Image (tube, rainbow, N blue to C red; front, top):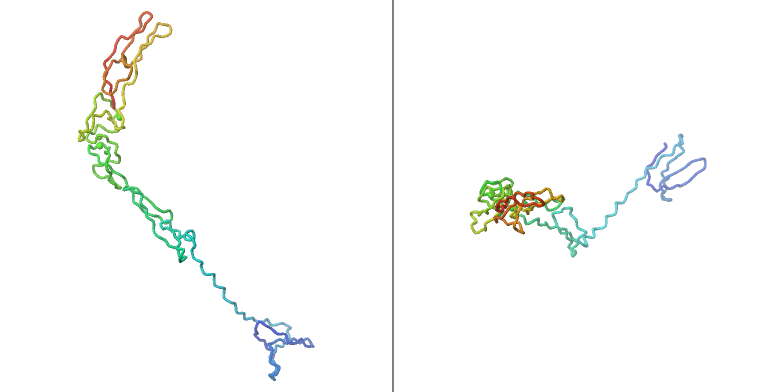
Amino acid sequence: MTRLASIPVSLALFACGGGGDLLVGEPQEPDSGAAPDAVDLDSTSGDVPEAIAEVEIPPDPLPDPSPGCIHDGDCDDADECTTDLCDVATGSCLYSGITCDDGDPCTVDGCDPASGCTFSSLRAWYPDGDGDGYGRHAEPVCSLTRPDGHADNDGDCCDSDPDINPDHSAYHSAPYLCDPSPSAPPSYDYNCDGTAEIHWTDMGSCHLDSMGYRCSTDNGWINTTEVPDCGIGGMWLDDCDTGIGFCSMTSYLIFVQECR
Ligand SMILES: [Ca+2]
Ligand SMILES: [Ca+2]
Ligand SMILES: [Ca+2]
């Protein structure tokens, strides 16, 4: 009977006999006295059996041990909320949390690992004593919603008079005193922009045209070289008239400079 054998990968070719016989098998001790097992490949079919090899595959070599960090740049935990440091002595990375504080009492300080410190704003609210919608300059209250008696700005320069605020448009010939700050000097800054804006700034004059026939009037301050300051009175040219070859004032008003 023809035998097929599973053999190690190392095959030994013993003989290539005549008559076309091909004997393949494991080497045998020559003095064993026993005929070696052989595979007679002189089969009637002529096919050569396929040898089955059992090969032991050695394991992959172990990766090189990590050399550890050498400098801070070797350490990165991909967290923007930590400071990445290398302990050179041990080769170990150290990650410590950062402090996020913008010093603004009206923000909530936080940290996003992807982007770092975050400061979400609360709104600042200022006390509004006269209820005109404008708060006075003072320490704000920080809140998402408006507390009673507060405004979202500090633009009121007199928080005891609801008529004095940035919306005020009229000019006045007399200053105001703001309670409860009697020590503050009188002010013409009715619209709280920090300045006393003068209302009447034109200088007056009468003009005769080049032909000498027509007289025109530039209304404004006369008999002075400077525009009067707030609350200061003066002559205000009202009208001019034409004579023969001349142009002269015919009327004037007494104005008191207004400011706001
Ligand atoms: Ca106010
Ligand atoms: Ca006011
Ligand atoms: Ca003003």
